[in-house]
Length: 76
Image (cartoon, rainbow, N blue to C red; front, top):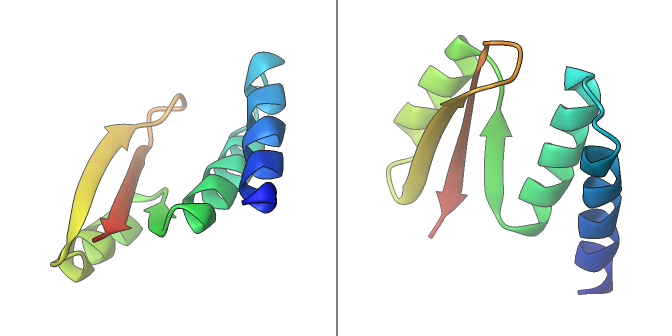
């Protein structure tokens, strides 16, 4: 639980400083996803593969700030 709090705090700091680098945002997103049993991908091809794999989970898709596709599958 402490690790999750540290990751959450780090992500809030990065977001609060208005960091625009997609690599940093992806790193923070993946760190949070690891703690919440969620898989995150950031390309159209990876999202297609994840959607096919996410049969027993909750699939979500969105546009990133640089107009790419992002997606996640939260395992149930």
